[in-house]
Length: 425
Image (cartoon, rainbow, N blue to C red):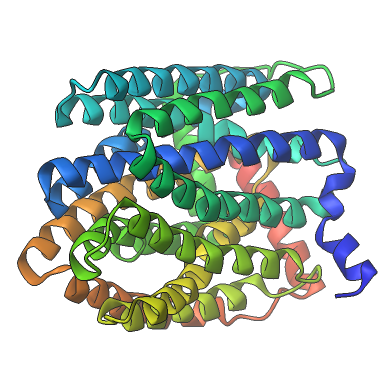
């Protein structure tokens, strides 16, 4: 890659605040994935139940579905920077409590589920504020798609490094040490937030009832198909395809006769594919048809899952895992990019709250379904069915995703339509 290409791939780092945010979040997310891997492994080791794995994910994410709409209202009403400082501090406390519980070696599954649910509630207020904050951190708004792609690459590098470290630490030191390291990792993101130089926050005038603001957000999404269709796609994929994480401990322990390190390697290989995918997205030129890229990556996701599902050779399985990791990462990255690009600034928090509701609502429900189905037909067959569902979803949404980029005339019409929607609100 040329020097110009490398500079283009990392152009969002020219914004000091975004560079600080990226650095702090990178460290914190590695700790988050260490904790997530540790929790899944501990629960499966204690219960040997795929359904309990699904229930664990449900407990950590369904509260986000319940409270994310209120999180979106707060994100639009108040200072998002301060909201994130509060949520990240609360996440640090949750990690410390989980570490104390594990280090004491006197814990049961329901205690882990309860702390997971607390984290889910925290995330309900964190996500709707954190995603729109990126707009405020990027100085040149033309760099926003690049910043969002780099954000996803950050998350997937953490997904690559975190589980691998977690697997090693679980075997050597136990789950408590994993959770403690995650607690320390939050100090990095809190430090980055405190050292940012942001413009003075101006409170929004004319606050209304929460129900009215929620209704406005829903009406805005319904009358903006460029947002509504993408949100529907993300929700369906989150329900039927993306909960593959539920099955990975089963593949590690039963299919490949491994241990916590094996589980870490599987998750990291999937993360490696996702990292490659995110750097691919970050290198795309401005104006690239992201909807078509989303269609192709959905097909890659389905085929990769089908090939991985019944592969008994571990190295080949890791290759196919990396392939469907490449496809999976595009789901949230491109969907978030498209939604944020088309969202009006004053609606962005509420739009992201509906996105969080769709993602955090469907993913835990899907985890319960996947965990229950795998108890009947086995993990390999369940993953095979999920791969087939990805192909079906790609076919159903293909007409929408294959549309060419809007012409300048159409873009003007969209802007006029959005203005009309806002006037009606």
